[in-house]
Image (tube, rainbow, N blue to C red; front, side, top):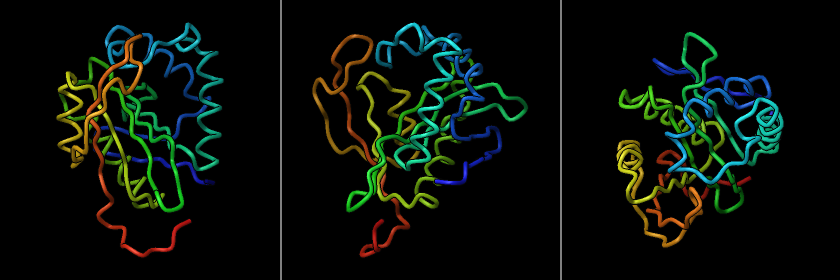
Length: 191
């Protein structure tokens, strides 16, 4: 992909994660470490450093260029402050035309509908610009905020997977959800 998207919502801005965001993303994860740890895989020390994020961001930007991911950073509109992450990963083309959605939002920004706003913009980009047919997003049964977010975005529950992902050092069950692109006609020629 050649063009890096710059998505604007009424209260956020989203763009593809790149090395220029390393310091802001490291600060975001350091400030929200305790808040996010129950919902994420175990992280090594480099994950919380600027140098670690420079390398990771370069890899994520390369994945975007290859068309295998759309890793978006969610920024406060008035500054380059990171308030969240909205990442579309494992993009598969051919007859599947699908990806996974993962997201996080800083503690101080919760409860304002900001992730719903940002994720909706990301979903529109993935469906309308990237032309994907399906987005899958899964959550732990006890993560009620995530369940409500996905429901508000129109995701439908498709199943339940036992011991699905290793989160915070434990194999956790997950509710499996998907959203289908309502604007993709059947029989379309696939890339």
